[in-house]
Every structure is written in structure tokens, then in C-alpha cells.
Image: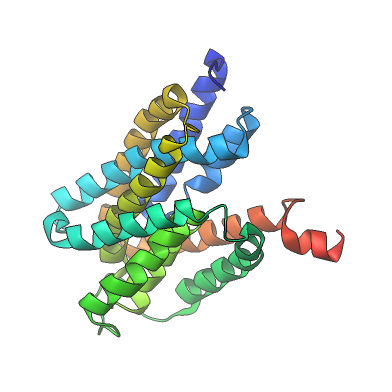
Length: 261
């Protein structure tokens, strides 16, 4: 889709700004950006490819802001970012092999589990806890696996990173959010590289949306650092539930097809 009307471009930019704002705090920006691109007339594969391009700007903006305030050491986390990138590249290349229906079927219920975990777990704050997995093991297993998922499918990857950082690495909520954005940037970059290689990215739309994403993520990450878990936790819960509902109400969702509803 090469030509997009100006009014549609403005609406897509507004959607991207909101997506960047939400994603920088709780993840789930694709919940807003991908449907907006589909409604604008993009094919599903173009929507996914263009979403990866514009999403790079939001995750980069949030990472820069968090790192600038000392919440994440980018240089120290680069090996993890490389593994996230590699996992996403492999995932994107495998996207045509792995049945997407299986992931679509399970994802809403996994997201509901994540929402319940953050909603019900006591003492969910910005204080670091004891780690249940060594950093090396975490980096070699969890990071590339979530990166792979982001490349092969995508929705909810940020929520998976958040859950892993809090439940396994023992990070506080704000620290987990900051580190999630860096790894999300890397997995977005890996997925984008694969989509760009096969020519399914709308550069004009992606770049316009990217600028809006950058600004939205800047605002969102600033509010997250100011309010910490008090803002991040409820927004993460709401985002996971909204994404689960969004997937379940889709007439093409495998569960609805299986049940005939």
C-alpha cells in the first residue's frame, strides 16, 4: 500500500503516539498500532512489517530515557539484546512453518495469567527480590525464547519479558520495565530486518508513525519513572486483559472457530 491519504496518516500517527505511550509503560503497543494499520487498508503482513518499523522508534525512545536516568545499563545488557535480536530473526524466518493457530489459541489465556499474577501477587513494587535464575541462565534461555516469540508472532512479548524479569530475575517493577524496553527494541529490530528483507514494510507510513511513537514513548517512560509500580502495575494488568479480549473477540480466533461462535 504505497499511497496513504493525509487524514489516514494523521490518524495513524495519533494511534502510534498512544501505542508508544502505553508500550513504554506496560507493553502491548501492538494492540493499538496493528489494528490501526489493518483498518487503514494494509494487508496483515504489511501491517506486521510496518508495525515493527514504527515500534523500533518507541522502544528506542523508552530505552534511551530509562538509560539516561540510570534504570538500565545498556552496555552491560548488550549481550542479552543480541540474543533477543537473534531469537527474533529465527522466529520471523520460522513464521511460515510454525502454525500460528496454536499460538493464537494459547495467547489470550497466557495473557490473563500474567494479568492475574501482577494483580494478585503481594508486595509487587519497585524493590528487587531474590533471583530464581542466574543472569547467565536467564540470558541464554528466557531472552532468546521471548525474542523468538516476538519474531514469529509478536503480541504480548513485552508482557512476557516483564513477567520473566519480575518472577525469575527478581527485578522490581520499574527496573523490569526499563530492561524490557531494551530487549523489546532488539527483538523488534530482528523482526523488522526479516520483514524488510522480503519487502513488506511501508517506509513512509512506518517512519511517520515512528516519530509519533518516539514522542509517546518519551512521555510514557517519564511518567513510569515518576510513579513507578503505582502506574506500571495497573496499566500492565489492564493492557494484558485488553489484549486477551481483543484476541478472543476476533471472529478469526481459533477458539471461536472451534466452538462455532
